[in-house]
Image (cartoon, rainbow, N blue to C red; front, side, top):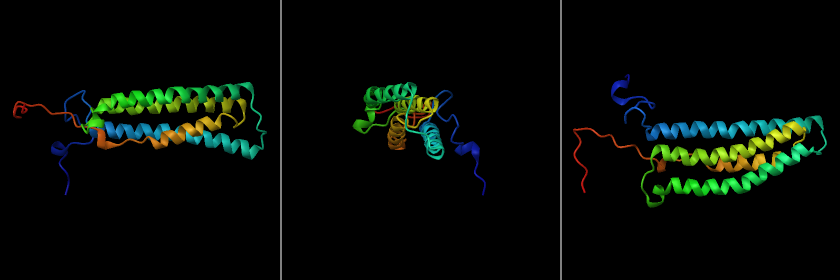
Length: 172
């Protein structure tokens, strides 16, 4: 039996109105973003590790590799806790059990993910340019590990209210 799309609507419908993201859209977008941000540095890092091990390259890195590794480690040590604090502020409604606005949910999570992604990419660029897995691969893989632990969670997101003239006024 075929489903009537006009009554149920697809996941990407504008049920709450144009320009308003629904909770299901926010969660779907969060999962897609998280997957891309997780797989990109992971595959790149594995390629660097495999190239280094198969070619038998020495563990000596140029100043570019060391500089990028140290820069990435410093970025991750300073920016990640800062973004986690900001994410907590943006998602503060969830602390009291209230649902979070879908756009705030995305802003909070994607901000932390982009911070981790930036640190991983800087480290991997240094490892790629220097031709050595060390030291760039260590901060990159730590960023990927942290990114894998901060997954999307649909339990914190709220559906935006659908206002119509037929709905009763909210109780005060």
